[in-house]
Length: 285
Image (cartoon, rainbow, N blue to C red; front, side, top):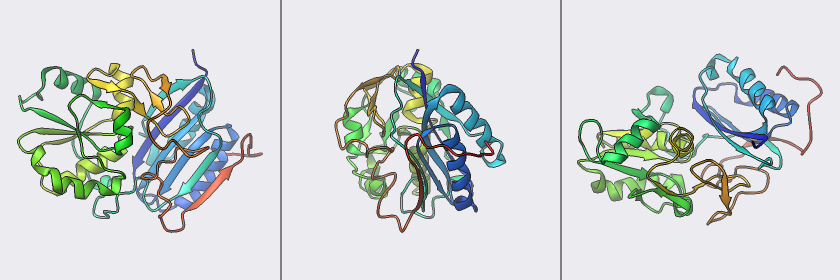
């Protein structure tokens, strides 16, 4: 079995202490020799980390001691090598950039559909009420090119900030259907589902945990191709094993750097970087 554990997790929750928390996260993750990217913002946390099984478990245990992250859920995959070159901890304006400040997922989530329920819906083509379902891919076009759900809507957006305009242009495609928005790990489709509800689109769900959780829990029925991930693995198959190089602009060295997720146009983000192999001498982790 592969020895490296890779996790992706996020939570929308108010963080008034994001700058101070950045230092503690860097200290704890460095002490455990973890690599990857952690984003912090006033709206929550978004992380992609890789390391040994015990190190990952210890980090999550430490993080969940903070009541704000007690119910943080992680998506797991495994690899023979660490797919990140260094550890980055950044404070950003948003943990997933949409440029639509009215969307506050912490204030209320759109309904979610779990992986097994979605697999059942896809097998018969309707939801439990008998309504036809439509899968809406909220990812970037090049990610969709690597793989997506069969028959999913793809509006060919190049960055997530384009989603609101795309919805207004294509809204008629959703009428009379149950809409399931999906993305890699759940964060983009959560914001997208809330925006659709705000725009008056009815019967909108988000795929809980995104494609990665769907692969983990069901093996991926109805999904064609591979899931693009923003690390050196680039593509994961339904069994969560790497399948080859991706179709688009691959990840920036050492991080999970999607221009849509970690836009360089954010105003003066604050960050900390641990050099490869660096570890903290003391830690509360």
